[in-house]
Length: 169
Image (cartoon, rainbow, N blue to C red; front, side, top):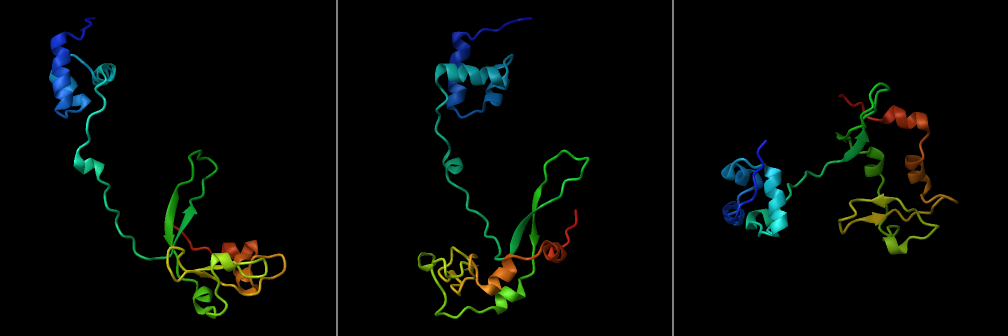
């Protein structure tokens, strides 16, 4: 087993290659008889780890615009014999006709700051939108929603299972 030490020449070559922007793997291949991890260790011991990032990697990439669809996160059930965690996936849902047909009068709509225990806290619309509001109707005693929104929010367990969309694996 031969153990190579870092000679002054190899250290100088390492510094030049590192400053030239080569990766640890590329430097290891260039120097020969040294591993990527050995290069990384030497770079850190020499204090060379802080090199400038290229402008292209420093700039955040623009995100793709997602279509305005009704999406819902649903966990995939785990079988009894499978110890892996459930994977989340997105399922496209049909718009709820009750929610869209239910038009809240302008005079009843409230902002977050206007809500009280006596008013319905049901959110309507996209919270990031300027048109977002809360129902503001008369809340049922002890509940945060009006009668209509309570029927939507508090469904019996059997009804919820019956109305869930079927998913395929």
